[in-house]
Length: 87
Image (cartoon, rainbow, N blue to C red):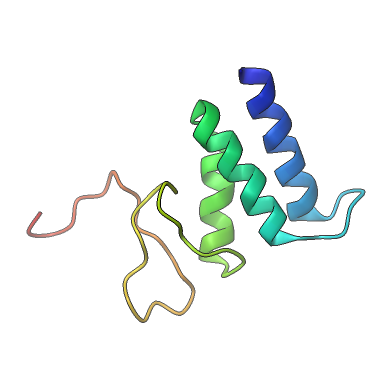
């Protein structure tokens, strides 16, 4: 439900920022992914992409965007909406 998605988003944010818990990007990514998977929560989508681009999480199947290109040190992902040349 939408309430579950919002609760997962709030837990992810708490772990992401270290609000009332120790900062834990891995736990943040887990909760953001749950919020995104349940309701396609756009804030969770954005937050997981930020964690990935900062190197605090790695892209996983089911995450928004496409996997980072090999050799991309920061793990930045290309949004799925962007077309690549030749595709």
